Image (cartoon, rainbow, N blue to C red):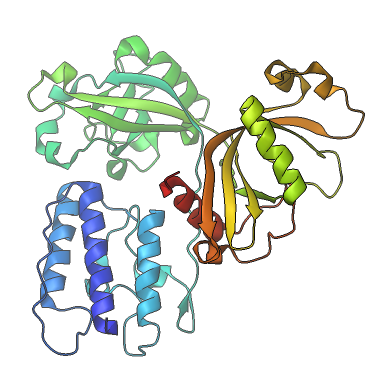
Length: 394
C-alpha cells in the first residue's frame, strides 16, 4: 500500500470510529482516485464536515480524551512524519477552521494546544480516571417551565450536566437546578436561572444541596441517563448524580506474570494440577528484592520449553495468605512451613496449550530462566500473548 493510500485508510477508520461511538450516520464511499493518492481529498473533507455537523447537532463539543482514537491519530501522524509539506494534524480535520474543531474522546485539538518538538508531537497525557459512587437517580422536575423542547435535540444519554445551587429560591430552601455545562460558569450567585433544564425533585435534593453548600461541587458529577420523547414532563428527562474520589485511580498494571519451569519443577506442577485441579505455591513476599508479586485476580502464565515447542498454562490467582488458602488445600500440613513466604493458590483458566517457537517470537527472551512470580512481560508482549492464549483452541 502506498503512503497516501495508507493515510487515507487511517482517516477513513477515524471517521468510522467517531460515527459508531456517537451514533452518527456515516457510510464510507469507495475511493476511485487513480494514480498517486495524496491521503485526503475533497470527498474525504466532505465526509468529515458532515460528521462535524452531526456532532454539533448532538451538542458534542469536546472529544479529546479517547485513548483508542488518540492512538489512531498517532498512527496517522507516524504515516506523515516523513512528508515535510504535510500539516501536523489529521488531513481533513486540520483543514477545518479552528472554531469548527471538536474534541471529546479522541479527535485532535487545534494546533496551538499541541506542543511540537521538531516534527514529533508531544505525547498526550491520558485523562485521569476517578472512582465514582452513585448517590442519586431521579427525573428532572419542572422542565415544562423552561422551554426544554427548544434544546431537546441537543441532549443525549451520557451527556454531562451541571448542578447549580439556588440558595435564594423562595419555594424550596434546598433547590438544586440542572443546567447544561455551557450555560453555567460556576458562579451560582450571578447565574441566570432562566437558563436551566429544571430541578432535582424536592423530595430528594437535600443531600445534594448540603454537599454543594459545603463546597463539594468539584466532587459531584451528573449526567443524563434517560430521555423519553413522548413521556409526560415529570418523566421525560432522567439524570444520575455521582460523588467521585478526590484522587484519581492509579491504573492497574495488568501485564501478565510469567514463570518458566525446568523439567523437574514442571512435572511437579502438572502432576499437582491433575491430582487437585489447582497449584499451591509459596512465594517470597517479604524478600526485599521481590516487589511485584501477583494479587488475587491476576493472570499468571506458567510455561515450559521443550526442544521444538513450548507448553503453556494460563492460570488465575484465586487466594493468598494462610486464612484464605487453607480452606482450599487438601492437606493441612502444606501450610506448616517456617519461611518468609506467603501461600498462594492458582487455578487453570486455559491449558495445556502447545506452541512452536515461531508462534512466540514476539515474547523475546528476557523472561527465559526466570522462575520468579514478580517477573512481568512488557506491555505489548503481554497483550499479544493474552490475545493468542484466549484465541487458542486446546
